[in-house]
Image 1 (cartoon, helix red, strand yellow):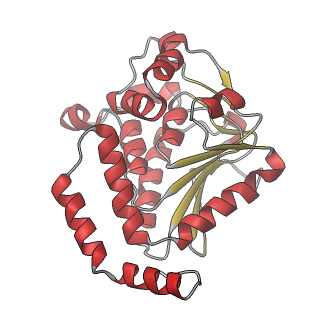
Image 2 (cartoon, rainbow, N blue to C red):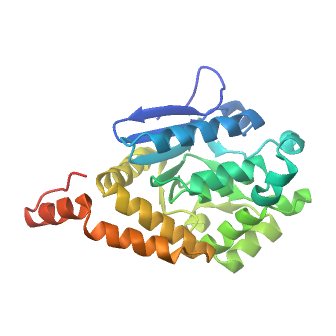
Image 3 (cartoon, rainbow, N blue to C red):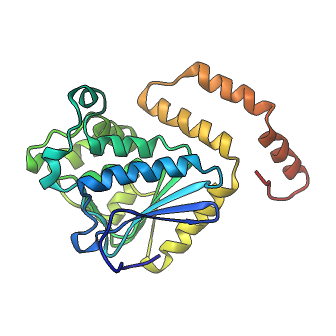
Length: 261
């Protein structure tokens, strides 16, 4: 994974086989997200969603940090139209929610510190693998900012009420071991092991049944929000019982080989 870039830019997409990687690319500013980056991220998410060959997405940053969050100087620019704001909150919130709702499984490769809104961006990924020198903090209380609803919901449903309160209300920085302890990190590794650990998980996810995973990911997210579409989940279950994936899965199991989905 590149540690530097020739010039700062909007997020960069790389596709290698079944794996897509989006790299935040403003290292001099700790990959702080600008307003123009938000639309670009949505375009990249749409592109990934439209490509059936992509089975897993890795999100990471260039340089020594994952991301310093959203540019505070752009706060005034991030509100969308009044009607959209009522349902989606802000342009940044739309991006994070879009990432969470991606059908493909997602891994956040936390190459360093993660701050502010980017803590929620990473939390929207299905897995977070971080270096042992990582740190995080959510400064909303220091800034006088009431965070948007879906971000608070993600913190509560992923990390629990007490951890959400500690992170939001104290605005204190925590280290990688604490991030692992509270469940923010899926795994913590030394920097030299980061790519190997991310690669192992990416290969596992890319090799599993994509339609089944997409449906189960949706159901898990809906359960977490307390808004399960039971009819749709039941329909997906019934369809899977007579679909091509289960036929290949059972055949591969009987033949003691890896399935080819």
